[in-house]
Image (cartoon, rainbow, N blue to C red):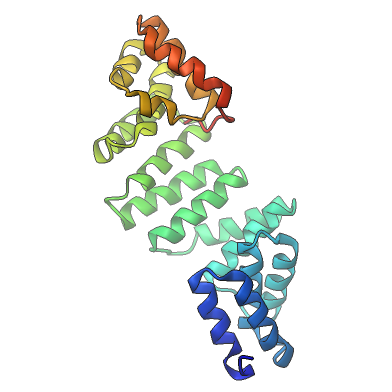
Length: 247
């Protein structure tokens, strides 16, 4: 058995190792002897969140918050717990508060943007992704996030197009970025440019797609361009497709 005085640190070690179940079991020993330790309750809430046990996670984090302030990670976990247990207003409050903080860590900003997107705060999510771009100038993921959330927020396609062109220049190996560009070009009726963006798509790239809307759009683009082989591949993939994640 782990000595009670080291149980918290052992649980923290398990957490950082990704051994969440072991961390929960070890942390229970610590909280049994120190039931009002805010750090212990915050860790319990973060662990419950990581295990998708959102209601107990919310309760643990709220109790930790009543004892002292939460860390940024704790606040992100609490906000997502609120979102997952159908308390979106509380989630929005926490996410919007975090968006006002001078956070510089690119990974934390990415988590914050995802959370804002979940609760429909798309314009603010785009702003947070823009901050992530400044924090990590070489991150194509952050730049794609700007385009993605700008699109969700209803920004004009002509403003999103150059961002995606830049993203593709940074990471030409990621086929989905070109698919996203096709979506934006199609919205502007630039069908020829849309076809040229994916005209050299390989069979592996096309079969990697799971988004139904993307596949339907590509099938039409290829069909209109007379590219029957690629159009056929896209139509065949539609049977194994999933809901859209369109730009």
